[in-house]
Image (tube, rainbow, N blue to C red; front, side, top):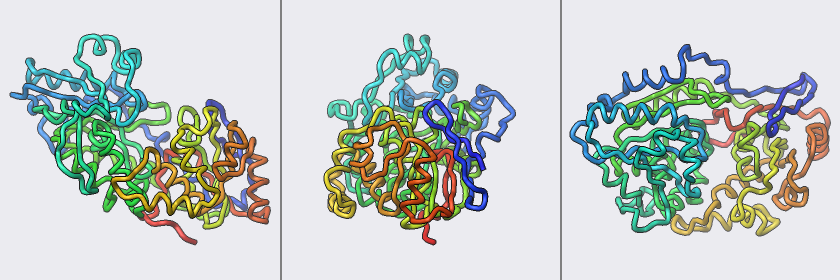
Length: 431
């Protein structure tokens, strides 16, 4: 069997005997034909909002309107979505004072050039646009305490709006279940402290904090609470294919529309586990496989279908190295994975450190299986992060066989680990 796998901007081919393959777990998104253009899909969703009056009706009599937009790190097609949201708001209220609020979460500020690229030159130059700063105390408003116990502070523009609207996109998320919807508020326009409380070790360790899991997920519960308290009233969320084109759109009530989009995604991305000794996966190629930090996301798909004590072969170019100083420090503080995990788990909800959640999930993966990392990262760096370096799939499969002490080990392949939801019921898969 020859299976093409994305690696940076290229493809690598995995060759493995048919008899050893337990399954190839792939999203069916690429096969889906929406039967309409991106623009028409967005228009339809606005014409038929779910669980809500049309946006134009909601805008009537609302003076201050805030529209939360995703930032430069997200592939949301704002050039298609934002003009239509603005049109509908002004159709209902031509005099509305509209502010586009860019939801950076804890990311760096979006630059003027990035705003122009994201929204187009007309919106970037004519509309009132503000970029969220999670550390600007004067720009934040306290809404109360999250179910996690942390203070919920959000951007004042969002908190004081007469009508709060958000754009976004939905994809599997490795601990929030799905992106989109309520995430526009938390972490999108929340304070750093609120984000850290939400990403605490206790919640990350919860068995329901997994891709595709919303029911009983404490991280999702916090996010829903924040969105409700902030008054999020209307969303337009899309689902994208591998070419970042809109194939589905859902608009309306923040929770009804998000639920519909998540159901669509689960239908096309959900797969059953195929337990194997070796699981080969990727982070979907460029741009998500530029560093090791991001590659943890793809590893969690493999974690859900690899046998305990097995081997994950992770293919991620990683030309930018580790991808996060705090993440790297956390991972290299000790050679003992159990000690590293216990150190993180001892931190209370108010003691969360930046990026500790990524380290926690990575350690969890490494406690289940050894990882052979195929990349262009420095071998010493890969080893310091408790993995085995390799530079080709052939070398990686040889090494995986040696680690297992057998050359006929069973194999499952996940061509794109960030595009699938391996259904485990929120529980760890055991043989």
